Amino acid sequence: MSALFRASRDRCRRLVVDAVETSVTSVRGFSRVTSSIVHRSSLSDEQRRRVDRSETLESAFMRSDARPSDGRVSGRGRAHGRSFSTSTSETSDDQTSGRVVDLADDALSSTLPESASVKALVTAFDFVSASGEGGDGKKRSASAAAATTRRLLSRASDETLRAAIDSHRRVDVRGSRGSGKSVALARLVMRARADGWIVAYVPDGLELTRFSYFSKSAKEGCEGLWETPDCAMRVLKHIANVANEEALKSITVQGVIVKDNSVQKKGKGQSAPADEVKAKDMNLFDYAIAGSNDPEIAVDCAITVLDELRTLAKRGDHKVMFVVDQYNALFGPSDMHEVTGPRSRKNIPAKSLRMARAVIDVVDSALGDDAKHVAVTAACESVGVSKANTAASRPHESNVTIAVDTPRFSTEEITDLLREFKRVGIVSAVIDERTVQAMKALTGGNPVEIRNLASTLLR
Image 1 (cartoon, rainbow, N blue to C red):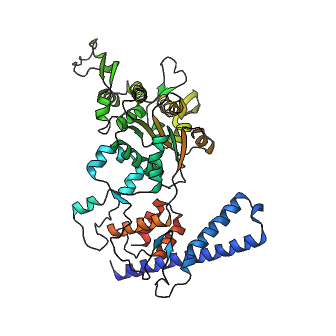
Image 2: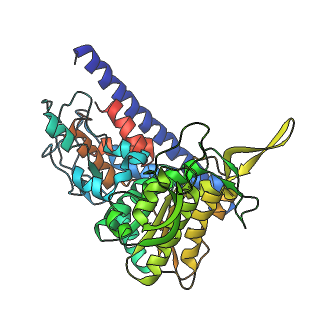
Image 3: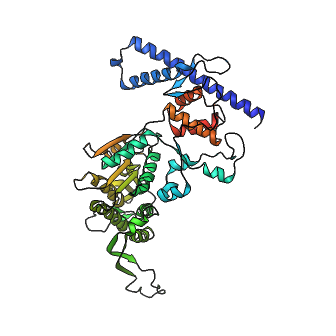
């Protein structure tokens, strides 16, 4: 790294911190003027939120005022129970709180084979710098670099979510955009499968509403619904994986219609043999695999698999859980349109798609009196669904439902995350109280923003 680049980086870092402290000073003045002129009860909701945020920022930076010019902290600071030494240098570069957990590749492949489909996890796992350098500036071997790419921060909300599925059948995970809902769901799936649960996991509910061939359903009782075989094939691939293979092979479905690939196809102009498509008995895993490769039976196969899993839970043979991320996407529009005239067409709502409707029915059935399965969902704020439709995706309050909040990162969690980033070489700056508080003020505790900002300003 050249001296000019280091000087530019340090100057940029100082400008950002100074700008944050200047803005906080202005916010403090706004808070005091507002509180002295207008009574809080007369403020609008938006004004009240601004005052609350200003007071939060003021308390967060109160300990940053009395600092000697050399950057050393006066006295001993404490942020939410975390102590910082009187020097800006850390006691140990490898110091972490012990809440950053390692995920072995074999454990990940057996408990979360869908990890490549979880966009939030792909980002969270990418902890290694492009240069492969560690926090000490030394080059790491390929094996050491690979070992650091599978690490997650264990949070208190993870334990709350894990306890919720033992006491409630319908769990709704809530939180602001970027608070870590998708990572929390993925971690719940991993832990549940390790405990013996059968988990049907849809990591992206939006994939049930787009990128599929579609046609009007000709099935009896499905008037007005649309078939989306590509969406059904994606769902089956999520269910028929190595994590569920043993349990699904223990379930037999009778009289299912599948193609017999062993029959040799006839040439052009010759009729196909009568036994090319036939009904037979097979285990649920093989049936799901067959459906995931055949668009003609994919939708019927996926619905059958979901129904069989519900029946399995009722028998009490296994604990079954359905987890759907971006669940509110199933209550909004799809990317498909119906032609209504020579020059007109209308959007097909996601609830009019037979596969999406089946997933909604499975989730809603967890509220039934005879239900034994658990349904866990989370809404996404960035999928283009209105607030009204997102509210419609929320479960009604009852004794079997619970809402679990996933808050943004606290000061303590930001400290753990930045120290982990430094350990693996993403950042090289000193992680002290002032850095943590500045990062908290700049990002609001959003983990994605923390990573992006840290990799830029703290290099």
